Amino acid sequence: MFGFINLNKPVGFTSHDCVAKLRKLLNTKKIGHGGTLDPAATGVLPIAVGKATRLLQFLPEPKAYRARIRLGVTTDTDDLEGKVIQSVEKVDLDAVQIIDRLNTFLGTIEQVPPIYSAIKRNGKKLYELARKGEEIAVEPRTIHISKIELIGVDIADFYELEVDIECSPGTYIRAIARDLGKMLGVGGTLASLIRTESCGMSLNNSITFERIESQIAQGTFALVEPSYVLRDSSSVTLTPESAKLWGQGQLVDLSQAVFSHKIPALEQNSHIVTYQENRTFLGISILFERNDILKIKPKIVCNT
Image 1 (tube, rainbow, N blue to C red):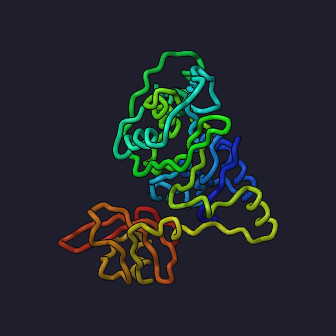
Image 2 (cartoon, rainbow, N blue to C red):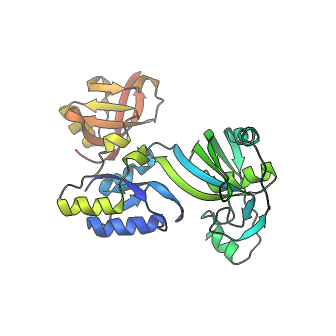
Image 3 (cartoon, rainbow, N blue to C red):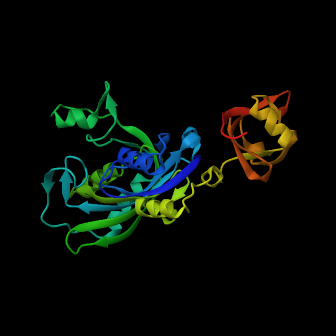
């Protein structure tokens, strides 16, 4: 088996739980995921099957989320799974105030991850240290927020915001909820989270466990082709003769390629998705320049 699954992760499952369940459903051990989601979160969990696990590092990095942020409440985990450590009786804010504070997150910023996170310190995960009551100084991380937009405000039961966020890997949405609450002077925590995009996959094309089981029973289940998730990457298509040489580990002159995409803009040692004629996926190449001639050699060989 070779390809990807755009899994719609259900609530209550860890990313590891999802991998374990798919190993049983597909009767194969070589499965990995493309980015951890907390058990309480749902949405896109990219899954690689077979040799596609070697491609996870080359998938598009940006991620997108729909977050529900509850204002007026602060918890020790920065989400509703944790213990409430502070709350206010009434939240009185308008959309202009909220949008103004949200805009301060845009761009490249420093973010302090939640204490209850899987980041390791001396071989131990931070949440393990936090549960023991140890004092923890969490170092800030550099992240990038390309979009953060207020979608709506719901004050029926609690004061909650619906926010769309597009960001770099390593961004903690729980930390955004926490920091937004601090900026607004009322505290904040993450009420729910849906990942809407990750690794070139989107929520509207995702598939549930129930649907996977149904398709397997009907004999209609199919993995997502690498060419789909890598569709926006720079690529090259080789002739059959060049593809054979490439598969043997030899340098191939790009003048022998049938078609190339965005190649002139790339720098030496860039990674390039590589196909054979008829769009057969071969793997990932590295770009070289020798005597003013662009050449490629294989980095990851998946199909020759």
